[in-house]
Amino acid sequence: MKKVKSAFGLLTATALLATMVGCGGSAGDDSSATSSPAGTEKLKKISIFQSKVEIAEPLEALVKKYKEETGNEVEVWGAAGDAYSTQLQAKLTANEGPTIFSVGTGAEAEKFKSYYYDLSNEPYVKNIAPNMALKIDGKVVGVPYGVEGFGLVYNKSLVDPKDVTNLESFTKTLEKLKAEGKNGLSLSQEAYFLIGHIINTPFALQPDPQAFIEKLNKGEVKMADTKEFQEFAKFMEAIKANTKNPMEVKYDTQMGDFATGKTAMVHQGNWSYSMLKDYGDLGFEIGMMPLPLAGNNKLAVGVASNWVINGKASADEIKAASAFLNWLFTSETGKNAIVKEFKFIPAMVNIEAADLDPLSKAVHEATKSGQTIPWANNYFPQGIIVNDLAPAAQEFFLKKDMTGEQFLQKLDAAWAKAAK
Image 1 (cartoon, rainbow, N blue to C red):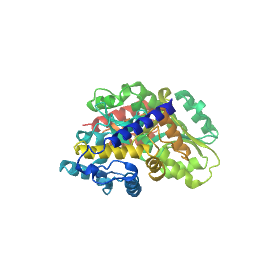
Image 2 (tube, rainbow, N blue to C red):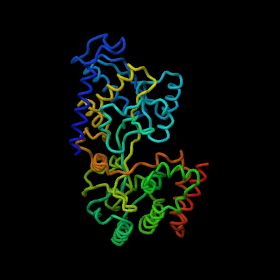
Image 3 (cartoon, rainbow, N blue to C red):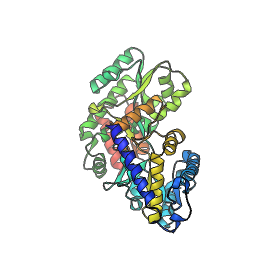
Image 4 (tube, rainbow, N blue to C red):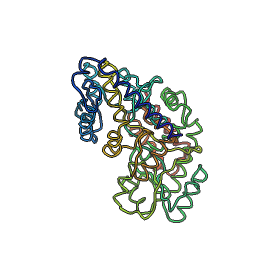
């Protein structure tokens, strides 16, 4: 079914592109100014402004290839790093915004939503993997850069996913490994690796995670009264009782102990492979499986950044911007750049990704099949993980007599303070 869908999307894209070519000359004055390679339509020059410094150079190289293949020009504005959002706001407010720009999922996407062009009918959006499109008010307004995912990264010689499917089996596995002198699971003391990622699961399992977060912000619901969080507290009690105290573990130690077989599982993401590969041949295979809270069988997969088109640009610029995105996501040159130059895990079902590391491959397979839960933590109040939830988690792991129920009460109190 996936292959059928992919082929349909590609054929549709090709057909519509051909239609666009056939309609050349009806656009603005710049459209027929010069001829282009392979008879492609000459489109208006556009600009791109985006946040990821690490793809700045490959993107510059890519737009040169785009000009070689189509004759059309794209100007890449310098990446602004941490100041990106501020600079983007200033450019858009001054009506000097780029034609294409990037926005993060969550609060940043909401902030700039009045500027988005509706991409719902553009051909390439049909290839966006399930649940990964950026939508505002039911309309597709952004195409994901790529995806990242997290879950339980495990040593296949020590853990069988069939033995970790719910709270009971998860706890028994930790107890068994502890009896064998192994650390069954490792969290680490950094805020996101201690609480920010693992608490995503009970939020993501709510029927409408964003609505639940909004109610939590208003004090209309409590984690302590919600069954998924009650079970989450029991998972955290099992971790506290059977594994090394994460307040004694830093990220590099966490991954080092996993790489050397001292730890059987870590709650981490595909990005952690960059640290594991430094250890060379681990001597065992690794995989990533879901945190089986409430029977969850899906990895947490999300999108950090999305491409959007400036809806306040001219019609000719919007047309040129959409043509560029279509080329990026359907041409062999564009697809190759996404995987091999940008180093992204594709969020498009028509882009194959060979030679991925084992963790990225697990995330990619889950993405293509739709076996994912969202990154609900994108919608948390700004700064709450570091400033409010992490201190509550630190207290839970440092106080031996603090129960899971008391931990939830601490989290509720921390949330109420942060949401004011």
